[in-house]
Length: 578
Image (cartoon, rainbow, N blue to C red; front, side, top):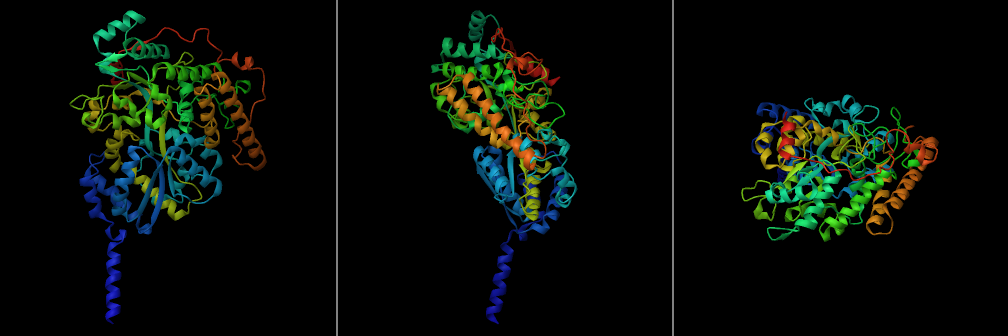
């Protein structure tokens, strides 16, 4: 009898320690008061939303699920803090693992290929929207929310409030991914240096126009030359006019697929991506879901004059105007290097690094003053000579919740609850203050960001501006992102190493993409792998035929360096505010 009593007491003690025993309103109230402020919702509205999560999670209390994302501050906050909050409020334990972007893509690809449930959900870039909508291996969230997942779909989710929902919508109009964080590649510059009267006078005398935010690549190049070659030293520090990276690694390929060719002007007009030619140089006619080719000979633009110009300028600027170490940097090394305080500008800078760039001076950040005010600003990206009005101007990463069909339904539902929790209006304003990766209009417009804006170097002004629509992720022209993305970095690396000229590298790249898409076409026609939306390559013909047609691919310009143009930053911000 004594033994049975002791066993019962022990069992009760163990039950008291289970997550489900702690899930409830008191825990929600504590998290709302201690962590989830400020919020787009009132405290009562926050509690109502958390009460819904508590009720919806009841069938899954005690469950342990696994999710995966890349390593950036936003996801570190989710993994460290929001998993704890979610477990205490709902009773569902989440193992939120962080890996490099390439490893995340590899895990997604492996689960799709094998059907093994490696993770219950991924924060997977919306760059894969063309893949997910074609392969139909990801859960169609539109149908899921209305059907099987209706009982675990937050009535306050408000999909229309997500500023990146067009990036995660397939050609069929269905939502396949839910944005969790977004960041754009913008232009970054040292405003304190640009504002110095002596430097303004020197630049004006040498180049004939004002030192300011460059509107085109000609001005960017002039400014890079000015600081690297002519200024050289500021306040006793050797300075450079450009920063980039060139290490032979997968992120070197993303450096280019992330709209670099489009910024030069290689693609077509259209938002969120060019029609019929996108920023990868892949052609897909309007109204079609079948990519028709990447080579100019098939109507693509991956090896056209604008693309070759873009790669040539990347390589040239890296060699001539960047710090010597930049050629060996990867993505993760190059962007934080700006905090050393020896670079005047960067044409391809990601706003995901805003949080580290506003770190205090005491932590070694040389780009803020003693009061923590940024000495730098962000501004719209300059465009190349092939660019024209109506084209996208840059890239916007949209890491988005993706659930694969190979995940068991109960685990998918629990993961969907977590995905909605970390993107909820209750949580999102606070999360955005930590990671500075906006996903909701209600957060962008929140008064707390009006107050904080002067400390963020133009981030809030950009996301409130009408110009933000010109920044978008990879779109639906790319039929299979993992297969095609891996082709890029080797070819670009061969340019940096000197093994190939930009033209040779892009010819080879375009050819390999077409070969890969031809295999996809055969698979789609034989086994309906891509749902009838796989590639249907155009027959090859003389490239001059396509280059003589209106739009992209575009014929080589006689003058690829027109007059430099700049704009005053303060005037630009005033225009945004109107």
